Length: 238
Image (tube, rainbow, N blue to C red; front, side):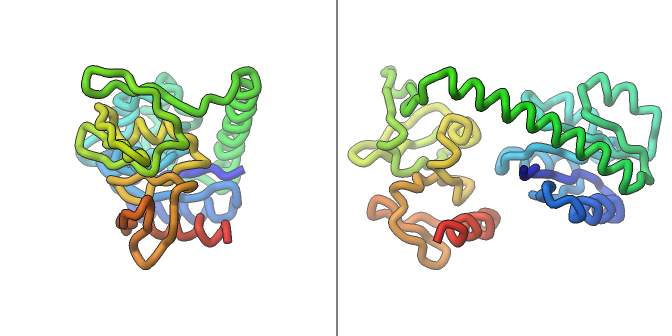
């Protein structure tokens, strides 16, 4: 099981300790490291995160305030030198509370708890999938109409601020949806985000060349922050 993990701490030493501990647990995959809550918010917009190691006392916005403002937060393990925040942290449904400096043994205990909860969540999702027939379409409102869009018809999705443009084989639909929402709607194994402004259909992908891909006779750029992960995916399916 892979647990995509984000480290949020304004102290480089604390970041390094968590990262070194995490490297000893193969199930943890560090997706990013952030010095403040603003950076963490951007990371959550761009990536699927299962677990956050979140410092409380940070500049600009505290870890507690940051968590309070998240609508659907991932699992959170607070890391802090101040024990007086523990009660408030648990009231926010934090998974665990690690008081600095914490040992590798204590770190493992918190991580195993996260792994167990994520496995239970996965099992519940699989159960729900077997109960419901797989849906290969979704509905979207655009131009005062409601469109039924099949996933198989989408070549790629282009972000346009507060809107997205669905590029189908023979038409385009502009809808009031965010790129994050589109990533939630689209089947994870059929679509891939290659740029902050582009999500592509893996079925419709024609070729990868340099820092671009070709799809439906259109060249699209691969974003610098997406390139490594995307190329790992491509190389893993050769």
